[in-house]
Length: 200
Ligand SMILES: [Fe+2]
Ligand SMILES: [Fe+2]
Image 1: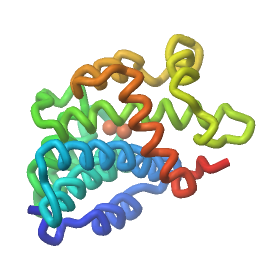
Image 2: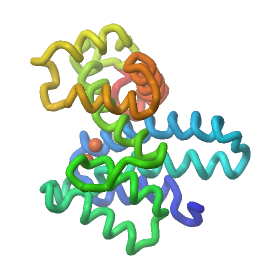
Image 3: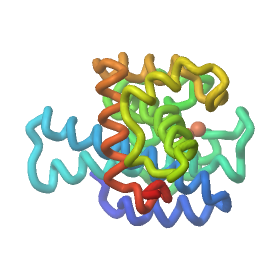
């Protein structure tokens, strides 16, 4: 399904289009989360071997590329439409394009697949978990805990740009409690702390 459209190519594309280091890290953080949900979904579907890898890679690619056009085309008129048009011309898999469109509330594309829901659910939470790590004196995500994240969600002054309801709606879309969703994404990001610049 992903023939030629690999995680490696998505990573190259993200870097080519994105000058902002924090936006590149955001792509990686969301990838960590969506990949974790891809692993769970592949297991739920009973996939193994190449089929499982392909499923997981779709999730990873969607996470990496969901904001790849944002640096160049941040307006509501262009993001993520310009990026998706480009990806479609290149022939990237349709489930990835659908998920990227559906991550934007204003796109009019409904969240249908598990991948659509996982991407939406991971986007705001990855940003929030990054903010939670960066306020630690160590700036380490290893010091972030689920209970602390929940507390920060209630603190309206903290990371004000992150919509709390997107996090709780995202968890609900995945059939998870907010705590479970936070725990999944936190673990996924902790596993890649070094790469995300959040190892302390
Ligand atoms: Fe976006
Ligand atoms: Fe994003």
